[in-house]
Amino acid sequence: MSNSSENRPVIPVLTGPTASGKTGVAVRLLEENPRIPIISADSRQIYRYLDIGTDKPDKGLLEKYDFHLVDFVEPGDRYTAFDFVEDASRLIECSVGEGRLPLICGGTGLYIKSLVEGIVEIPDDDFSIRNRLEDEAIEKGPKYLFEKLEKIDPLEARKTHPHNIKRIIRALEIYEMTGRPKSEIIASGSKKTDDFLYKIYCLLPLREALYNKINKRVDEMIAGGLLEEVENLIRAGLKERVEKVNVMGYSELFKYLDGELSLDSSVNLIKQNTRRYAKRQITWFRGMDDIEYIDSVERAEEIMREFLRNRQN
Image (cartoon, rainbow, N blue to C red):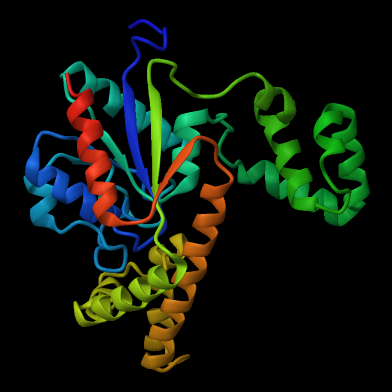
């Protein structure tokens, strides 16, 4: 495939904070054109069994339409932004090869930024090395490890506070695993395909309207069986694995079932945490370049429909 901008397919991305209406837009587009592949960019909807609390498309929709990267990771298993970029890039390439333009849809800003701008592959944790370095920090003090970092990776050391022991240990761990300084790995380049361009649209309702939608959606989740879903997870022995991924709606109800909070307090905490999450998402989107903001679901449908109509092969 040619890398000239004129020949590269432009892949549409529909993002926005939680409860903004992204998935609804995607489903209505699918009703008009069932062949559109939808590649989810949602770090919560990847997990199996976490259905209601993540507002995952229901099983009927997942079976009827061509959804990808939804409901395929066991709770507690590692799935990184690097994994997402690899999976999404492969799916985009396959879809375009079939003459179908996919839609990237989801609100995980790190996933989208990594796909569009690239991401560096950092090796997984090695706890045997980390534990040894932590023992060294206890025995010889943080200064000893920081001085070691200054010798092997002065650039990373300049960006690291001498008392940030967690970051110091991680940089030393990476060096021991790879034989290369962390700063060198980052500078060497990122995982990114140049075969595609991206056009990012962000569905961003007014804040008061968004917060009202969040509160309403949480109430609908409770009415739709979220508490029963959480109870089923506990019965299946999945509580610890779900707690590990820290998905809103579940940790709060675990506290209710553990007797730490009343049901009303748990529900209110879900609403509060979801509003805070939406605020963080908005801050993330504001920090990205080349985003077109859309303030209504109706306008988002219109823009996406027109984009796909003009770009389909």
